[in-house]
Structures are given as structure tokens and as C-alpha cells.
Length: 356
Image 1 (cartoon, one colour):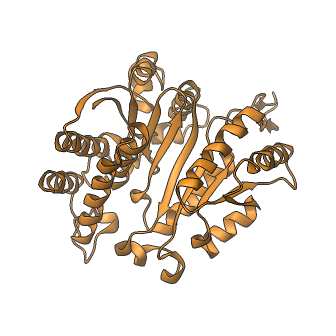
Image 2 (tube, one colour; image 1 turned 90 degrees about the vertical axis):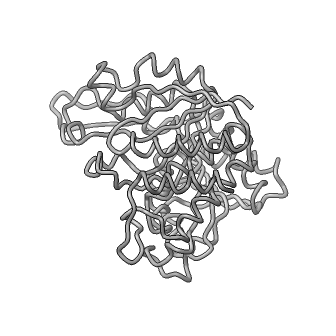
């Protein structure tokens, strides 16, 4: 099979972790006799520095011409600490989501036996937790218009806008995923307060009738935030709007014990994007200490969701599990004080794949 991939390293630790994910991708393609072509492009703060645009047209063209995008991270303190900056790295991410039609962010939340002790929750609560968060990605407050500030600087406003089409699209995808898992879907909103959430619930209740084999429940977002911590194993697939999904998925990520372990897939109308959920971690940039496993696992999602290559994704997961069992990990999840570099972890996984 021919695989044509856009590589967007981005900022901070992005180039380091993307390098390891790309090497793993190459090893998988060699192992399974796939033909891989790829090309890199700029995005984020580095793109602003070099072109003045956080998502240059050349980058967008490459993404549109590719079968999938493997993405690192964006963000730089010089922009984070300057609230008056007119152009920001995050604007590039939002533009990429909008122009590629990245309407659904999938974040699998599952625990790793060797990391249970690092979770802030009791082992009996998190052991065996395994659910999928589905976050709507192109609507809501992040994209609502109008938005702005008053001339005197004392008032600011954002608008939360959703259309029936946007809701139907994401909810149907969530039902499809629930049908492939344990046939339970939790739809999260704030319908007791927000008009946009009442539309979410109305549309979802209409779609629910199409999936009688799926157990459906509705939950207010504050209750969901509490139950993710109290009882994470009760969830199978959870779907919600953009802002709620942003918050709940970050909350859920700590269940596993490390942000450096969790991948994500942003499913697009044009091209899908696969990326770790952690940020650019600028303090670690260039030090060869960043955890590459979330990015490597994002490559596994890429094989599965962009190319429907399940065996390839499964082998990457097996290699990651083996690296953790053998304690070949970076300092954030190191066992007994022994830590390996970003390159060493990636190289070990590549060797495992080659020798499997």
C-alpha cells in the first residue's frame, strides 16, 4: 500500500518526538511492505518566525495533498507570555482544524499496568479504565462569531454557535465508535443552562432512535467531570462539544499517570491529523528527554484510522507495551531512577518492530 504523509514537527519538543514517530512509521512500512513517502512543513511559532503565518499556505497545500498528517506540537513562551501578540501559534492550529475540516478529536483513555502507581487516583479506580473521548473540534466558543472586546477594555465576549449538521456529524461518529466497542455512549452537555446544549440534546435524542442496540445516557458536563474521577471505568465512549471536550479530555488524561502517553486522532473531511495530546514542553526542547510514546501511539492511530491497517497499529502498541515492561522509558515515567533518552526509547521500539 502507498502511504503519503505530511510531517509537521512544530515547536518545542515537537521535532524530537516526531522524529521517533517517523522512524517507527518507516519500520512498520518496511515490515509490512508498504511504500512510504513524506514531506515536512512548518506550523506554529517556527512558522511565524520564518513566514509570519502560523499555518502557511504551503503547509495547508501539503496537508491537502497527503493521506494523513503526523503532527508534533505548537507553542512558545514568547507568545504565551505576550497577551497583546497579534499573531499566535494557536491560531495556526485552529486554522488547520477549520480548513482541513477536522471535526472530531478522538482521545483514547486507557491505563498501563506499569504506570498505575503514577496515577493520582487509587489503583482500584483506574486499573482497567478504557474509554474513548470524542470531542467536536470545529464549532462552539473557539470558532463562534461575533467575539471581541469593548473599546474601553472592560468587556469581552465570545459566542457559542452550533448547527444541526455539526452535531449530527459528530454524534453519528460517536455511535459508530460505540458500536465497535462496548455499545455504550455518554452524551455530555449543559442543557439545563445553555441553549446550544439544548440543541445538542434535541438532535442527539433524534439520532438515538437510529441506534437501538447502543445504550445511551445523557450527562451534564459538571457531573461528567466528577464521574470521570470517581468512576472512570463506567465510561465506554463519551461525546461532547468543543470547550467541554477540551477540558474533560485533559482531566481524563491524568488517569493514566502521564500526559506523555496519550495519543489523539483528529478526523477530517479532507485529511486527518494524528498528534500527542501534550503541548510543546519548551523547557525540555533540545534536551533529548521528552517522552515520544504518545506520538508513537499517534502513529498507531494513523495506521488504523487513516489507512485501516489494524495489524500495523497493533504491532506499534505491542512494541510500546514491551518498552514499558522492559523499563525502557524517559525520565517522566522512569522506574527505579533509570531513565532513557528520547532517541534511545524510539530506537528500542524500532528494533523491537524489526525483530518481531
